[in-house]
Image 1: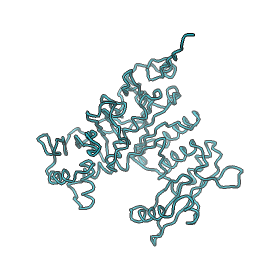
Image 2 (image 1 turned 60 degrees about the horizontal axis):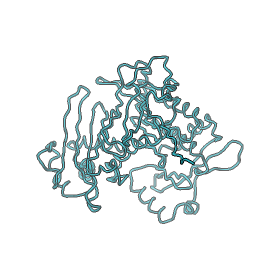
Image 3 (image 1 turned 120 degrees about the vertical axis):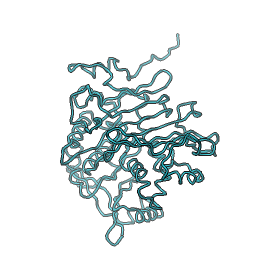
Image 4 (image 1 turned 135 degrees about the vertical axis):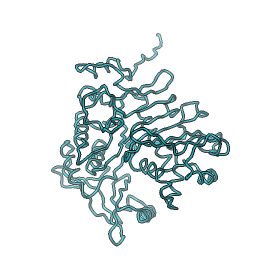
Length: 445
């Protein structure tokens, strides 16, 4: 589970900001929203409210940038630093809990002085601790002009032998990514165990949904009926969704044959039983048969009282967002931190509230079904402040000052009574993070 995320000098966040998922001891309600261990209590939900341009999306982008640079060795934005601060380090640090061990992994980077220099990794660190607080550094690296080999290095002896090769590789990647890849190819075993755990957590347990990038990998044949029933509940007009076989000639009208052949080859080489491919027109479900042949199906929608099939691109954005959320819930995945930019985009406010209620209900902790997922979202849904759905420490505000710098702060920092109308106080400006309207300049006649 995610415990905290620190960012500095990324987009509109110039000074270091921390998103903490550790609960406040002062708040008593909704104890079912907490995962408790011997050290602290972790929140399962967090919503970020604030004005347009305040920095909410930049926080989601920071998670995406962090994950992309580690997993794919790619930067998602060339201009990632705060404006005119390219010469200062941009840094990220993620702390999470898995298998009763707390890991903290972070790195810093800068743009090179020239386009040929690309991105320069300036620092990188990894440590772990037990639930009793005994911290063990695995490595702590600071770069100089010739790589990670100066006096400020702290590194586990089992990993030190790989540092020279990493420096010599001169690739745009983290030491974590380099070691994970090297371990996968050369079976380093126990010496790389922590490396593999951290890399795989970031790869598999952090799922991002942005305005331009949904994730439909949770759709499977076995959960289509459950997803269909949920879509019916929300008055989408959909009666059912199905995966129907499609022949090759129909697919190549949407996907060029050469590209389709490459997709099939890559799929066969990957250790996957099935996968979803999204095109401009549709969603295609690829699955492997026992003889290693590939079967392809298309996702179709059936609407009430209409005897015709609807394709993916004919559905509304709100319906597609519900499709993702319900496929995720139906998948019964565990220990996933789901980050959604604009949770309520394309949805009626009452639908958004009801969907959140469903998510919380199905994500409730029980001894037999622990449900350790977290939901972190940016939103303009101020009804969250008045519906008693969330704890005060699950509400964050993100606002920008007159210098253009964003900051994150929690509603729990303010004193409120049980009868306080928080939504009204928010609109009255008590917590800031609302639009500041400026009268346009008018020429005198």
